[in-house]
Amino acid sequence: MRNKIGLALSFFLLFSCSDAFAKSGATSKIIEYPRLISGADTPEGKIALEVARAAFKSNTPRLCESGDEVRAKVKSVVLCQNSQVEEWHDDAAIETVADKAGFSFVYFQKNKFNARRFVVTQYTHSWRGDMHALNVAPENLSQEEIISVLRVGGAPEPEDTKGVRVLFGESWTGPWIAEKDGTTCGIDTGHPAEPLCNWNIYRIGKDESIATIAFHPQVKNTNSLIPKGPLSEIALLLDSIVGIPKEDQGTLNANGRIHSDVRYLWMDLVYRPWSLGTAYNTKANIERNLIKWSKGSKVYKQQYDRLKVLYPQAEAQLFQHYKTRFGWSDAKCKEGAKRWMDSIYRAHFIFPSDG
Image 1 (tube, helix red, strand yellow):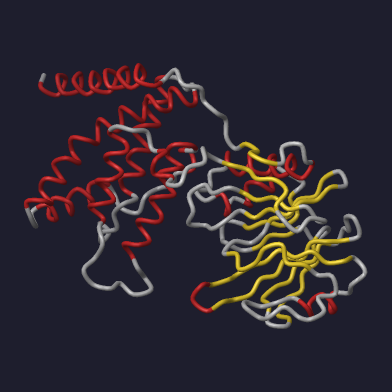
Image 2 (cartoon, one colour):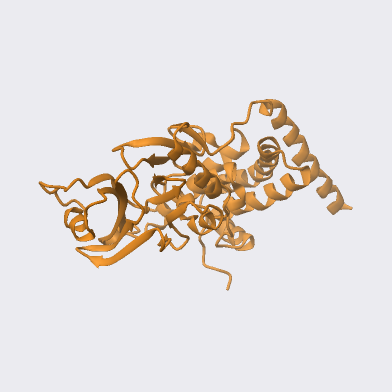
């Protein structure tokens, strides 16, 4: 009997809180993403938007690493980054030169557009790993001539660039290239740590971005896009619990990595929850360790107790958010809120594994 009463109370809390959140803001207009916020009439922008939509619908948490899924659906993609953070290219459209003049790889677009072609460079930069740049070169230059004026890192620009221009460089993610119906575009997918950041689209004859694709409303701090209420409160509380360690963690920077990763995952939770993967720890292991942690001080105990109160409220709010944003059935919203609230919660903690 006691279990039945507890179950009934849980359902009452879920749906009564959902109703309250629905009344507070469910009538606001939902803007679809991704969307072009500049360059909407350009052919390059339209090509890139098709690519962006496929990336957004993918099951990969970070858009810049969704190339495996995107290229299976969008045939215009000829160069992209895959889930192993490596470059994939279509041999029919891209020619690759490896280990040349300080570069790990140089990718030459085979097709020429307006007497020019894109050239993507990749080189290793010590602790940063691989860095990339998107360049444009005249079609009459040979590969050797192009490579002779390409720059590695902070090397100075040569006096004679032979007409080769750098559209953007020092990028942590590899530029993507798409070709379709006599048009090509270069895509800068942004910094991998920036949550669902804008994509900048480049035309082969233009030195600056000619279109921009957004994946969420334009704000200074993406944390402000977490729905106000228990969800935003539990996000702040979890971030505080992860905290800043007293001792320097060196280049590993475990806590810093968690803060960065979950900041991205919160945006996935709100805008594309299907991409959330499986968290490292089990829920049981996390609870055991949090109970131990909560005994360390009165503040820790208060934070842990507040976490237990907020969790079901945040799950209820997430249910309503999915109902409003996606128009899913109650059953799908309930199952999704339960599963993905668990995923975001567990993503905040790295404790020794159970096994």
